[in-house]
Amino acid sequence: MQRRTLMKAALTAVTLTALQATTALAENTVLKIGFVGVTSGPAASWGISNQRSMEARAAWINETGGYTIGGTTYDIEIVSFDDQKDPKRAIAGMEKMAQEGIHYVVGPNVDDGAAAVRPVAESNGIMYFPYAFPKALYQAPASNAVLGMVANYQSGPAIYKYLMEEKGVKTVAFIAANESDPLSQREGGIEAATALGMEVVSDNVTYQVDTTDFTPVLTPVMRSRPDLLVLSGVSPANAPQLIRSARELGFEGIISTETAQDAGVLAEGAGDLANGFISVGGASTPELASPMMAEFVQRYTDMFGEYNDESNTKVYALEYILETLKADPSAITDVDAFQVTMDTFEAPNPYMNGDAKLRYVGMSSFGQKRQVSVPLVVNVYQDGAFETLFVAEVD
Image 1: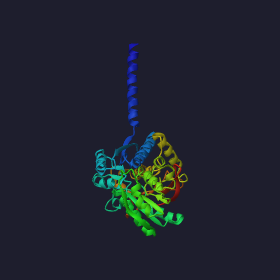
Image 2: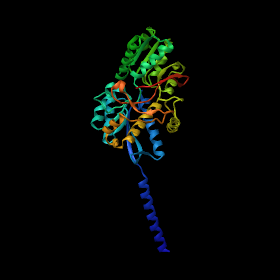
Image 3: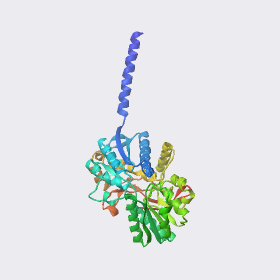
Image 4: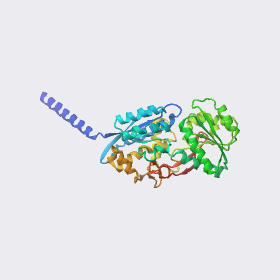
């Protein structure tokens, strides 16, 4: 009896050892992808959409067995850092990524942060995908930044042209927060509107981002009686307040912006007064969305309890990184190889119906391919939700 017990114990130990070895062999290598962006404060929804999109997609990949690159299957780990819309914190976040040996980072979400991290990214071999518009980030000699969305100087002309042709808009007024991002976007908007032949009737009114009463700010703008009021670079937190104030001052024209917005925030902050508000949307519409996009939306919603339309765009950055690494596995640790691959890279777009492709664009705007190709979807807010106004493409 004692001998059988000892043999059984020995066999059990051998079995456990074998199982542990099998489990160890079955574990996937971890591939870390970083996110540095704003997830707190007035612009939080921009970065939250980024982070949640990455986490939802990574969880999906890991749940279904991982992502295979060059014969190795990886589990995807998202390493996140809230820069609080502060360039100094953005630098600290990118330095953290470098310390962890991360070569691919999504973000930052604003111009100052994206410009601030450039030296850290370039000196540490990091490719980063900002949601920021300064052309200098994407033009030679810069090489490590890839624009993750459509820029205001690409969407603005498309919106203004549409409103001129379809709504008879002739005059436009601009208002911007007294920060570098919105001011830069205002200048781009003024240039685009003027080139199209629109009359700019107000172009110098600004506000502080912590403003709570926009009536005195907007009053001089309303005196110019524009057909179109453009909220340049407006954050999701400020947009409903500006819209409400403009409508309460009697403005009956069209209000638009080239930044993405949050329907829930608009509904809560402006209600029906936001009806007709035009903004850049996520890179999908019900007609464009593939079954994979529908599943992504469902998984995101199940994971976080809500969905942000902007994530139709934000889902793309991680997909582009992984697919480009698949095209050249050596790029996992060699961003030079990644940059070479970008020039000829093409893969099926899993989030769109039809034969759409993932590819890098930007030759027209930057002289080199430093932008992901996503559809330019322009939305109009109506009764608590976004509706598609029109869809265009960027070269």
